[in-house]
Image (cartoon, rainbow, N blue to C red; front, side):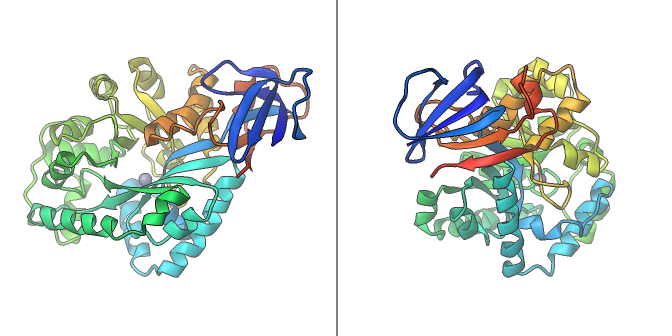
Length: 395
Ligand SMILES: [Zn+2]
């Protein structure tokens, strides 16, 4: 049993506690409250005057792309997608796993306790299982040719059925997911929807995607032709990306959409009504020239917001708190408390992890601590001051 004391403890689902104490035992929180005078058993650890948060939840990342850090540089979106595909052509499982292991370690060091991790290859699942990270892995399907929709789905089903059963006992769960509406046919999306998924999709990320779904034109026409898919007829549906996803039947409360940049008030109302989770990845959006997501409008509409870093192929780091800091800088009118919620409980809710994202009796004893030099007046502002978090794990 250990007693952690900090200048502030932020349970997230309850008001912050000045001079707070968290008691942990066998990997779980057993008590949270003020650091009062009673003297319970266990080792006392005084963290200092900073802010203790629940372990951060990165709701959208791609650990398997970590070997591409600095390889696929910041670029306009469609050229970046092309460069990414070219760079992945020669990747080996060893290369993917080696870089993923380092990325997992870096994520933990900066306070991340759980991830929504998109993967095509699934090579690094043993590395996730051996780590501190609790992981919901989104097994991502790509398939634009509707003639092959059934066979793609059957292949993915068999792939997931073949995974070792012990992964779940090590905190790794794999769910079917789709890449994006310009790479997954409406037919395949509808088939996945009929089976309760997909659990994740990139949606409303770029202007090129919006144009393609509107009238079947723009940069993705040439892109698909290059991929040998020019014969697939697609005229668009005069719809926004969110409306397209709705027409394919995939908008449901178990869906995490990444990005949501190209969205308007009608889309926001629909996302809120469907209970869809939107993982904002601001630094990736900026690096790829996609602009920032309309956070204040999303918040006003009541859309369920969480945060992601996206991959090291487009973001500078897997430091989730840095994402919240970026959004705080860009949108100071959005309360800091909202962004702290998005980085913790928002992500845990999106991934369905009931024992993450808050500090309460029974939750996992995994934390992000933001140190401070002196007394902290506002714990939410301090959490987003730009100071890095440190991960603390008690297994
Ligand atoms: Zn992504």
